[in-house]
Length: 540
Ligand code: FAD
Ligand code: NAP
Image 1 (cartoon, rainbow, N blue to C red):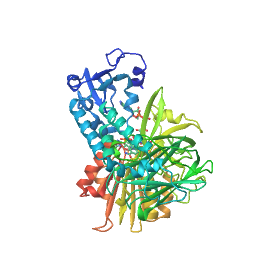
Image 2: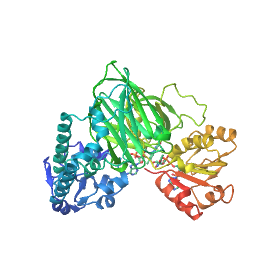
Image 3: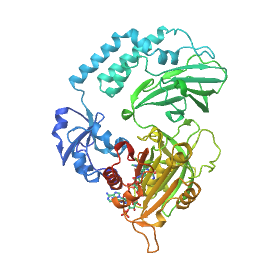
Image 4: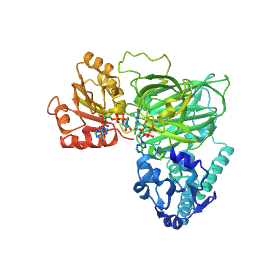
């Protein structure tokens, strides 16, 4: 909040009196001291000296990128932080394009133009699909006829692309991505129509695709479908040529890796073409290079769970299909006194019991969060002030946890501290219902006091109902009446708790809580001979 106040004070934070300049690499290098520190992130240069004392990771972390391009370092640590908004008053200008970079782009451009036939072939599915008329219900539209206007369009796009690249206005990855749209494994898409429906079919060419793998957002005439394919996103991004209704359906044919999105036309007329390509349309982009996409969700309910933790229920817009996979988190975004603030949160199920009935809505429209409100925190007090019916922006999911970690699992150990319990909720639900090989689940839940334990009675009831589950509460600041375990995570507590059912049983230990808790836990687990593959730690 102090930083936000300073940015609003009107103080000149760049030392350039509001001017924006072009920064050469030589110039950037000169600004490498604490009191004169410039850092480049994604082509934009910021004077971060005034921000030093407010940086949560400390000055030394920021100084690692002093006078240089800190994009990679930034992405490694907190790609999700909305630095454009946080640092907007520190913007010095953009990097001047280097001659070497210019040469690269010219060569890329030459390659693009030289493989004209290849490009036609490579983008056949995208551009011709977008433009060419396809007969009703025709899954195999036959050879595409690309009209002269299309050639003109393609070449205009290429020249515009090359021009923007030359101006340094597009990140390099997008330029190379455009070139990679060939080859048998590149995803593609198609569309077909009936009188009332338009179906967009995505061919991922992968078999491990499910409803979690596809995120669809429709806003006004823009249609956006992100398909997660391994560590990349395949993006379909189109300005639709005609109006469609708000809701749509999504179907995945796992055996062939095909996704069908069925849109309902507003008018029962034949469409001549699907629409026009928007930014990054038909691109396969490494996930680490994609920005986070947000949609506005409505607050449906808010319920006290402990004295400081609440269960928030958000509703996705009807024009969104999104499912948060087990163990993944999303980012919530609010504008706080004009600055966009983003924090990560892990969705939970509405309850630990599978018989819990969510309000009836198709496509899992409700997303639940257990969120602790810190009275002196930046984000949570603002979130807590939202009224039912208000909106908060929510990103697409992220995270490294994969359900395949549960394969043939026999013993599951969960170590959670405070709200570090949140990823364990869906894991518990899933483990007890969907892992046939599972013999035992043990949760060790660390809190300060009894009043801080989230869903204590639900956990006790679940352990009573399902004998495979054991729950152990450990308190660091208990009252004198507490006769359970006390203290912090320690070798003694863990060695007693983490007993394998059988000597060679297939084990997974999940750990989540304050960063030092998690780090110490991982060290102790290694000391107890748990291998890297047997441990999953949840971090941002
Ligand atoms: P902050 O402003 O970050 O402050 C938090 C506390 O630290 C406050 O008590 C504040 O006074 C204190 N503090 C802040 N700055 C300083 C300082 N410089 N010196 C000393 N004290 C300071 N939380 C949940 O409740 N539920 C979840 O599901 C959840 N999921 C998460 C998933 C991930 C992947 C990660 C990384 C975190 C998750 N968190 C979750 C934590 C969440 O992202 C926020 O960190 C948390 O809500 C606090 O945000 P805040 O802005 O309100 O507080
Ligand atoms: P908390 O109530 O402050 O702490 C919970 C328990 O952990 C307490 O017993 C506490 O003991 C103990 N603890 C704290 N720091 C410790 C340390 N260094 N070593 C050993 N034990 C320690 O926790 P909280 O406020 O709910 O915070 C939860 C944390 O989990 C947040 O940092 C949040 O970011 C993180 N989280 C991460 C994810 C993820 O996916 N990565 C998801 C959810 C939450 P004391 O009494 O001594 O403090």
